[in-house]
Image (cartoon, rainbow, N blue to C red; front, side, top):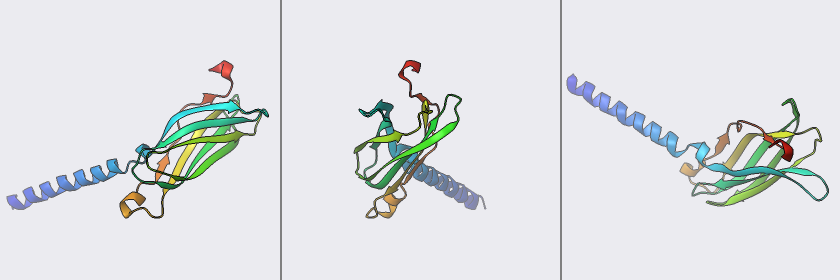
Length: 146
């Protein structure tokens, strides 16, 4: 009986370790990362949320998308914008621009980063899709507020 309990205990420890390893190895927070965030005003006066995202994996992503809420002075959402790309390869970076079409927007907040692995990816790589919760904090669109 003791030997059975000891074997069961060892099995449970190994199973917990294996589950933890898979969770860490497929942690979506490490797949695509923001390298920088900012904004710019184009020659026609249109403003853009800008940024660079790096693929930290050894596989490619078929699609990646950034969803951004544009905020007013009180922090209310006045509009949203999006940027997306296709075929982001292993180790590559993506410089994105998303237009700001609301004049009331004074800040932005990254709401979601989603991606899909390449259809040619292995079963293991297909588990490496990503989702990122909102980036905490707003970045000022007014350079005098920074």
